Amino acid sequence: MRHAVIILSLAFFLPGLAFARTPERAYQEEWCAKEGGVVEYTLPDKARVDCLTDEYAVEVDFASKWAEAVGQSLYYAERTGKRPGVLLILENEGGSRHLERLALLAKKFGIRVWTTGPR
Image 1: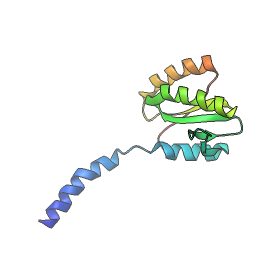
Image 2: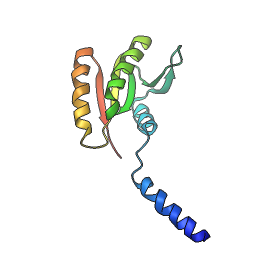
Image 3: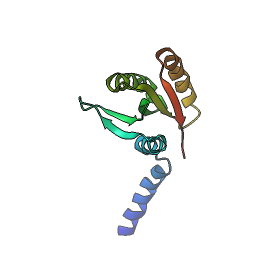
Image 4: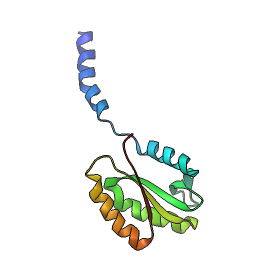
């Protein structure tokens, strides 16, 4: 009986592990380190900039959250005196439509956009 419970548990949980997404934080830390920035820079109001570099206040988000990333990057830029930036995580081909939407607003509001994807 005990073996049956273990086997059923593995059968249920292992497939989910195969499709687990890389956490946003992993992309954030890797990219920010490469750019020489500060991860999770805390503002006086306790908001946290995902990555603060010498030039940019960067929000890191998955493609489907592109609209939130726009607002956050603009707010962080205003509060830090840096330029706004977004690192958009593109996990699949569907992310390109989100990138196109982001690009439209990025051009209008002067937001620098970078992309990254699955490793």
